Amino acid sequence: MSIVSCKYLPLLKNFSEIRSYSWGSACLAYLYKSLCRASHYDMNEMDGSLVLLHVWTWE
Image (cartoon, rainbow, N blue to C red; front, side, top):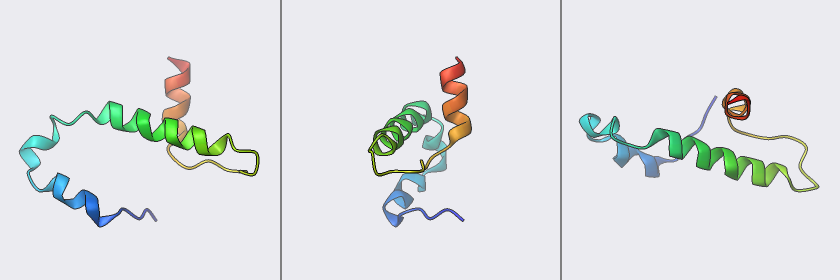
């Protein structure tokens, strides 16, 4: 189950503008943030889409 903060709901108010958002940049920013958190010595797991990370590193 995924939990999303309510602060993102206004972004979905106008469906015609959703396709103009930079989804690739948002995904990469989230992956970088997840990698940063996972690099700490006391972490033993990583959140985020690991499939997306594998595809990104493969390319």
